[in-house]
Image (spheres, helix red, strand yellow):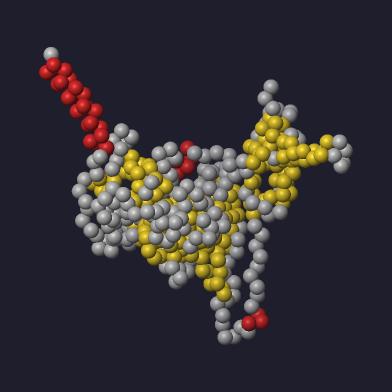
Amino acid sequence: MKRFLSFIVLAVLVVTLLPLQAMSETWYVYTANGKTLNLRDPYTNRVIGHIPYGTALEPDSNLSTQTAAYVTYNGVTGFAQWRFLQKDPPKPLAGVQTPAPVAVAPAIEAPNSKSGNIIYQGSGYEITAHGAYIQYANKKNRGEGQKYETLFVNAEDNIVITPDVPKGKKIDYWVINGARYDFSTTVKYLRMTDADDNFDFEVVYTKSVSQTLISPEDIQLARNDDIKEIQTRHAKLSHMTEQLKRGGGWMDSFDFTQDYINKATNRIEPGGQITAQVKATVGKNQKVRGWKFNETKLYPSATINYFTVRTLNTSMTYEPIFKSVATVTDPPTQRQPPVEVPAFYRVSCINCTFSGGGHTNATSGIVPAGTKITVTNKSGSTEVSEWQVNGSTLYRSVSIGGKKGQKLKVRNTSNTITRTINKDTTIRCLGIIN
């Protein structure tokens, strides 16, 4: 009987220790090109860290999945894909610094460091590269130092996206935020500053298929009534035929929210997407240095006077960035100062409509900076509980005891409000539910 009980106790100990043994297994980061491995947040799947090639990790077998290992690196915990982990320490790669084979990696460098492993954890704008890598720009505006697949940046950051050209391949086209861009000449790298949104860059090579291009079918499945408009500043746009030939004349802007007539073919096109050529209006002694995609500035490796964007599925404003070209025949007094271009911002209303800036009872639209709009309750209730502007509750001051009495801040419950627009603004009206 005692021997049987001893066997039971031994079996229980073995079963109990098995998970601990699995948890203590060491795996090593291995990427074929020596790049860092993304560490992703367990709840949002956002990239929260970058683990260097060769780093030793101890996955938690209880929390890992079939496709992702649950690991901790530099005090940050998240998921990393199993396919980039192996049991044996990887061989050193030329030009790639491999950490010592221990479970504890070097300390994190300060955010905004140009060689740190984690940049802007969960903050700023997320920039992702496929078939390319991201680096911070040096003083000559070329990529230098640590290479990243994903990077969080702020508007003041200066980064470079460089194609990682496979052997025997050539650059075919770029895909930016799911839309294809065919530039007037080959772009060998893109420098980016003044980021105002997340960007997803992909470089597609000859005889290759894009992994991030949004198909026309998916665009139609996700289509809604949000306003979609392509606009140009100091440039023009034209519709295209199926053979990508221009037609129908040049325009400054075009609304493709609903189905529309393609001016190049005189056929009805499904709304929610557009294919167009955008061409800079180049003045005397001017040269195109780069392009603004909304407010983000992109500087290609070569002069791009025009480009074709295919199946664009979101509102976009394109503007060339000019560089003055001096000539010996033009005295300095004849040079004109740069033209001030008015800014435009998007207004979106939820449970409300707005009027102003050329719009009447609209739910969304683009208005010039400084436009005063009137917003009206359309919540379905005759009484307003509160207004929210860009996620913040709108308050107003009331006086108790006359003009000189105490002033209190209370929620604004008026059925109409006015706002002056100087940035992208989302307004939500919450009605009282009886």
